[in-house]
Image (tube, rainbow, N blue to C red):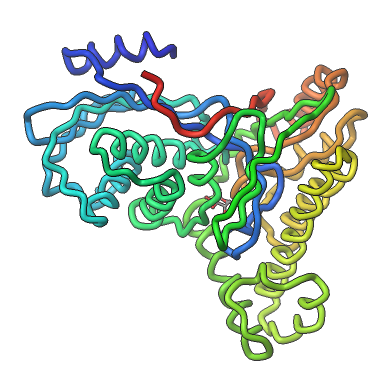
Length: 386
Ligand code: GLA
């Protein structure tokens, strides 16, 4: 929907005009998967699509939430702003407001809010982070709280932990807040230092393939991976003090890996240590203009997520395998948390039509689901639109 249409929808909902319009993007991660909560680096881009939030003050001492994807308006008074609802989409914006309150911000002003987004839900493109960050950005602006973009991302992450009950890393919220057009964000998830790296892909496009798989990376499977990595760290601490798996080079890992007696934790750790190295190599390859190497590292990332981290599943594996068969595909891998969701591929422009036709047909024939394809445009992070 256009901004104009959204403003009309706001007026139709609340009977008065919106006072401000905000936007925050979804993301696609190029490489560096399941490294963020292990203190490693990631390399995502903000997308040109995301979530809009329109807002106006009210004098009713309540916050009204309406999503254009949901039928009802949910109205909460000021003493309900720190309590998670049992099952509701409102937990995403509410969890963010709760973090403002927890940081000492008094909410004494009522607001009417309307939300609309075009990041496909459950596709691993961070629709939830887009919603969290747009809420954080809007409240920061409306209340004049002066948090910087990194703090807004941390607020979004904490809200995901406490209100969505997913112990996620910082990647999604960080890139939604700090992304920049035509750049990828090389983020050190331990120090939160980052570099914007230009993504210059002469004659090559980023293609996102949506498996529409019914399997989602639910909080259970995700939190289990987080816990398995902690087990690996705890067992490694018997031979070497460390906080995060990402502190180890591959050579260091090899010399002490036998300390991880839990075989599952061992595989998870091997993925993380390898992925950290691949991410660093991939960033260098992109800076050097060596796309071929970048693509090989993407493929290796998928294999490691499939075999060692076990977060791919038949749909993502099929989508990646079919992509690898096409001439003109530089690299292809699952992106985001995994299980269902999307792959990300670098595809030469002249091969894109063939890619979409053949990968689409072969995926549908093997899996029985019609996939979707998007050519990604790298956009900016959170912003006030009007
Ligand atoms: C999800 C989480 C991120 C990150 C990825 C995997 O998107 O929200 O923090 O862990 O999975 O890389």
